[in-house]
Structures are given as structure tokens and as C-alpha cells.
Length: 102
Image 1 (tube, rainbow, N blue to C red):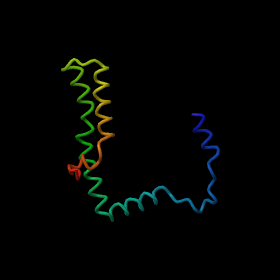
Image 2: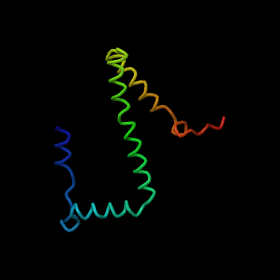
Image 3: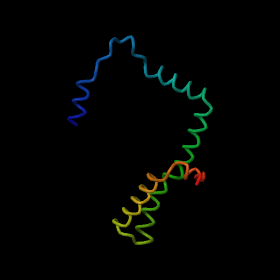
Image 4: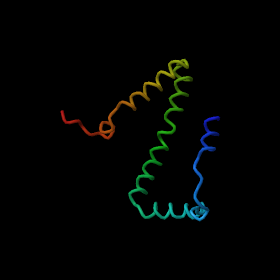
């Protein structure tokens, strides 16, 4: 909290109020840009669909692991940690289904 307070105190001030725009105007500009880019719309749609399924995966694993498989909290933590490490070290092309040139 102290670091946040110090950051706010030492943030540079805006030169003048004329540089500020209304939040609504900035939102309209952002939405107009988003609507003008079909590639961003497809990406947002794909990510939203992915999140519908992937968002439930970890809570389901934890619930099933604890209730059906009788895993301890340590075992659940290790399983989730292994999944996180595997996701972090797996090259992006491997997740997309591409084969490496070896």
C-alpha cells in the first residue's frame, strides 16, 4: 500500500485539462476501432469460447480430485502446479499442433 501511495504522489501531472477526453468518448472510439477490425472480433470470439470451457477445468479437477478420488490438498496442489509448469515450458507451436522440423 505504501508503494502504491508513493507512486500516486510522484506521478507526473497532466499539462492541461484540454488533453483530457471524456471516458465515454474514449470508449466509443475503442468500440468503433474494434468493430472496424474483423480479425479482432474473430479473436475475441475465439477467446470467449475457449474461456467458457477452460475456466471450468481447474475447479472441476479440484472438486473431483477431492471428492471422488480422495486426493489430499497437497496432491491437488502438485497436480495443478505440474499443469502450470507444463503450460509454461511447452512451446507455443507444440500446442497449436505443428510438428517441429527435426
